Length: 151
Image (cartoon, rainbow, N blue to C red):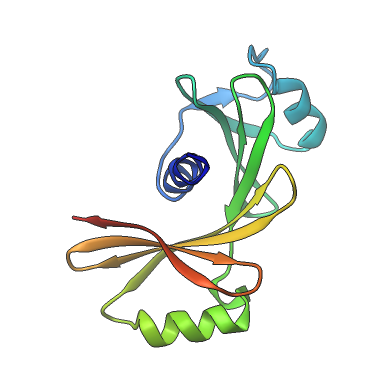
């Protein structure tokens, strides 16, 4: 169940667009006070809600696209941000560049996801002619297929 929940967040973070909202607007969900405290320097925020699953704030901070996820009860789930492919652990870079070679696989996006406990994982979305692949990389550089979807 936990993996399915994180998969949902990763997929949404890797390719959704959000609707615009004013950061100064009074937010109704319980995570708003945490967000305002932790990200008080952010000017333009887009908020989305996935029914009873999570609330997401999207913004650009320091030139980096960032998403913050909260439960409907206002608890922090985690934070994702775009991440440079070449900054992944070296063992992951070796595995990915030998097993998922270009041009067969084309990198679409690379994100870093930090959960509420501070655990870090990286997610890469890659396109192949007939499939979309999301790879999960842990802090030690171990690479696993997180999801695979036919186009």
